[in-house]
Image (cartoon, rainbow, N blue to C red; front, side, top):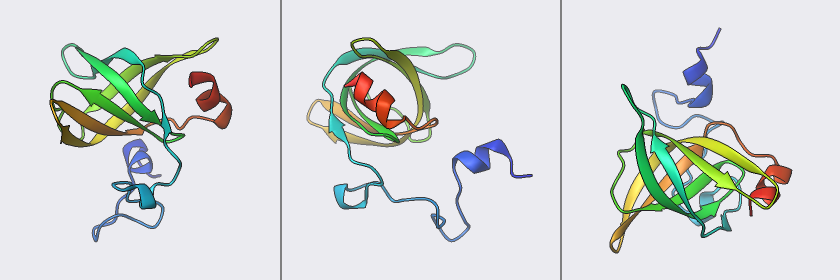
Length: 125
């Protein structure tokens, strides 16, 4: 049986596996990112306690989030971000794949642990 964490983040010894995608550029995205722009609170998932984090959702897709934050968050960190739509809200859990400086902010590229359905994505926009 494959451990749970290996199913979430498959990788071969030689680099990304066949079922992983390099999502560092727009031409390599598995799904289209849609602009969002709302401010929300998130948490860095950590022991012994979660750390609050104020973020602006730059964009969202079925499998990822682009978050703007005032401080860098290390690659590999797990986050929980609450998003609210008109009649729908959900806490999204993801892992930071990169933190890139954007002027006075940092762009956090996050891969969602549980992908959104098309209906959920539409409800959150």
